[in-house]
Length: 101
Image (cartoon, rainbow, N blue to C red; front, side, top):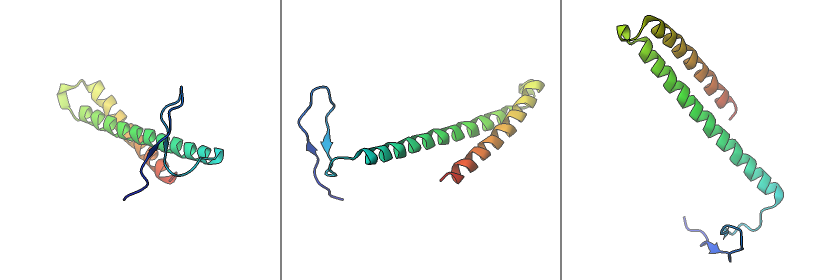
């Protein structure tokens, strides 16, 4: 997919290099919309990372809960509850995330 070649704009003191992408100047409303979209995408990435971490934590807790005599009984019981609770919360988080699309 060939597009217009990038054109380097002359440097401005105290400002990073700017490239003209051929779209013309961005209006304030366009910039606000673009930044809001970017913020929503970043927030979604953070939520997805939390979802992965919760699922990984639930798996680790289940591993300890199912670890047998290698782990103390109180620890196994607590880990079992953490595993179930964390997995349920991860499912709720995933459902809310899917609903927000």
